[in-house]
Length: 64
Image 1 (cartoon, one colour):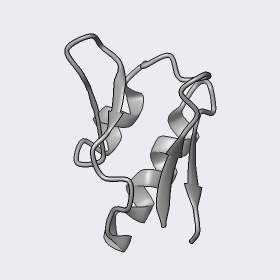
Image 2 (cartoon, one colour):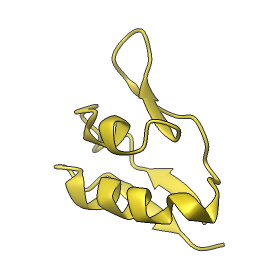
Image 3 (cartoon, helix red, strand yellow):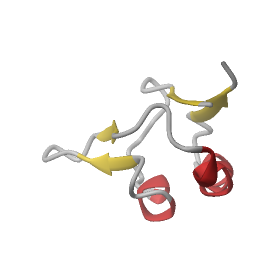
Image 4 (cartoon, helix red, strand yellow):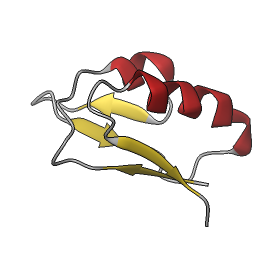
């Protein structure tokens, strides 16, 4: 599984950071950063929650 963010849509609301802090964070300029593009399978539940919580629907999970 791979985390994909459409940075054209992303407003860096940080809801995903609160749900999956080992995968997402905000940088010093408050822009979203993906810390782990291919997280372990045990984070799938959190990532699905982050996808659902994103107000701009900018996050997706790609199956490689």
